[in-house]
Amino acid sequence: MTEHVTKLVQQKRARRQRAHNRVRTRVRGTAERPRLSVYKSLKFIYAQVIDDDQGVTLAQANSADPDIRPRLTGSAANKDAARLVGEIVAERAKEMGSKRSSSTAAGTSTMGTSRRSPTPPATRD
Image (cartoon, rainbow, N blue to C red; front, side, top):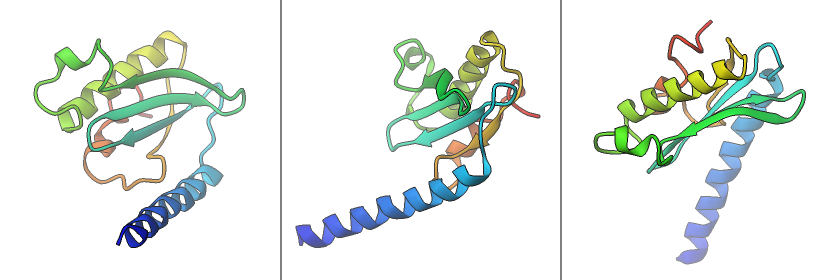
């Protein structure tokens, strides 16, 4: 049984990687318009602003951060957490001089919680 479960997990990871690669062929972060990548696990939400030309992360935020965690009520992976992480990563990106970004959901479905994270007014076009 464990071989079957392991195979299913490997297939799921491979499917996510293929989706991620499809998105990455179309979306590329630049200095003027960096890429905003969002990942949601069952426990936390992670967001980072990336300049692919230089290969650096300009700003990042996640709901596991000790500065963010006390401001959350309830789960660290719900809509409120996504909104808070999005606002903080937008604030940090503004400090680094970025006003606009392209967004990706790292090969995951953009329905629900992770969709709310990259949409604060500070990162919208």
